Length: 532
Image (cartoon, rainbow, N blue to C red; front, side, top):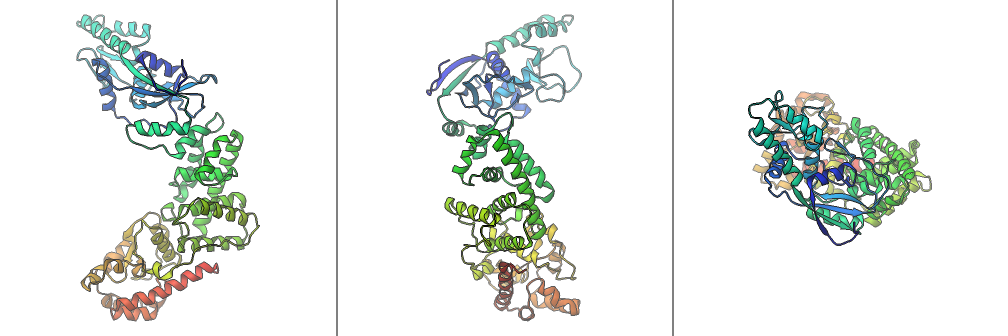
């Protein structure tokens, strides 16, 4: 077979294609999407083959690169060939070839399998059997084996429609054996060169990610990137951090291997030995466990959804990989770093240079070469308190954590707010406008000013409904009567000073937000000193 860069179309029969898959000459690279076809899609494909309709070509990549590939296609266990390269990787046609292999090589065990397909010899149609087998139902997995085919035909030799059934069985077999598919082979290309081709022809338009490429490039019998990603997510599930993106886990593996966290650093993983990859992956899993334990035990984070910036977790994982048991002073410094990087929006415009500097500094801090983490941009306190509250923004997630850190008490009855529950999922209904939106709209206050952080507190949905759209003068005065001597402590836990309370009773929104902003800013400065 000629090994060439130029695409070369060949005409192959279905039987030849599926047998090439079976012997391991055609493999499915792991950067392919999972099998997603529905039963109706599979039956339509088989109907097209039977009737001789076109089903499209397939694209094969003939290469000497050894890539991670699926061990099974459908119910077919793919033979593992010796290291005789080049080999063909399927780039386009996975759903079709999987459907053909699955039907023809179904192992017959799970009757509910998506590959348990029969051909009705009487009605000449493909279907999924949902009742006891009938003589006219010819299983597709009995087609290619000569003895299987003969034995299956014997089941209807006493049937009144024997002649018609035999004719249609032969017609079915012939349609499969004679059906030809155009297979286009490309070769002499690297994995990164093939990536754009795959993206271009992929029917879903799904782009290959760096995880897809590195999963294929780093695979060996001893290492599978999927296993590490699964191990990290399993370890973090109990802490509600299992949604860490695959690409972020990958950059931590690269960091654990002594590389960086930028794309060009991650690409160097392909040059690492299986032993290095295994050791880096194991260290990465432990680093994630320790980092998430720190975030959830010493900070008010209770889920990944409220992490302001993903790079914060990436850097903490690297810290705990190097130093698994930091001193009290180190832990205080890490908390100060978390708050300061969040309020300053340090990671909002990160680039490769900043990423490299941040990683170097975190490593030096973990190794004891420096005593503190700094170099953050200046915090714009006024912008922060006046920014509109939107939970899809890092600043508002930071503000939600700030409110939770204060350990707020319910404005209605003084009971502690269950902040762990509130922050377990992103739900705007757990947050309340202290000056109700309806009141402020009537007062013609602009939407951004209505939603500013300085007007938001944590309040359960039930309490939120109870206050509803009541005027501030009414419900704050009622709170004063209801809560008595406990009132100020409850208000303080929500950053409402005595003076701010008076402004709310007077329905002076500008003065209320000014005073509450001051209390919030004082607390931010307190957190960023590391003295909390």
